[in-house]
Length: 171
Image (cartoon, rainbow, N blue to C red; front, side, top):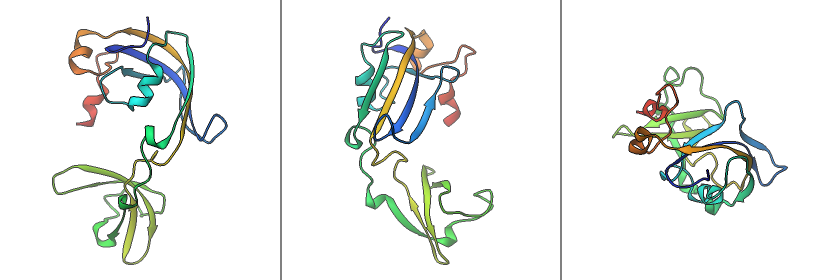
């Protein structure tokens, strides 16, 4: 069976920055593979394009430029905020440079970011995607391809064999 729309795809891969010898950013092993519904529009289009047509057991390796991945770093996404907006109790401890945080706006939407700098008056937070500005190299193998179940087709997402849909946890 080949990777195509409305199939469940299971991969193992290594994601590295700037090519096959770059820094390891993420690894999905055969013991903890990446499982997803192909063609639901939830993944990078260029990522899916590279996988389309592959079969179980096929290896793959491809590189996505920032333009085809998460875009360039947007300077407008780096925002100085008044330190008074931050309560250490809400962040589960002291505020530190490099710390990942999630802030909520007035409508309740979440905005994940990373703290770039801290001073007495303000905290500078980068709200760009963590992979923005990076060239991404994927190298792996297609472990399994199967037809989606009726429930997966309805939800357009992978559902574990025990019936748990992990996308439900986000809500």
